[in-house]
Image (cartoon, rainbow, N blue to C red; front, side, top):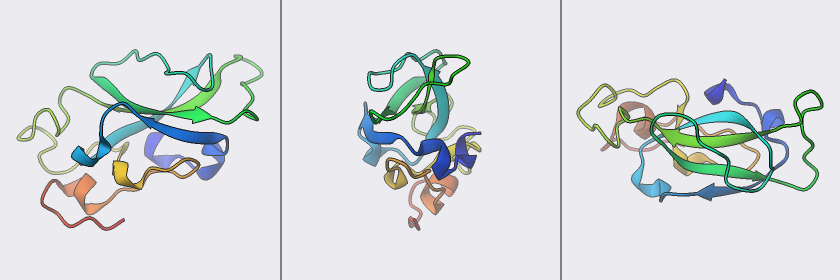
Length: 125
């Protein structure tokens, strides 16, 4: 679902919170997670590490069935390019990868030359 997010999925986003400086990252993975709260740091239950998340505005309502909020989370796995620059993603990127420089509240991140092909490539946002 991640790189296929629509602006409708993100309508109640208020702020992007970075836990790491995104300028040093060619890409981040993005996904929608369901969380109990709309503004605090969400739990992280995957391999790798969370590098950022989104806070929702006060008008966001939880899903009526689950009582949980859908929020975007940005993360990297142990085999991603930042940790293994000569590994699987030396060139190319996972499907949910987007350039962190293109991430803004209420807008899906974009794939760029840098995020998809690797360092040293001119970024086209």
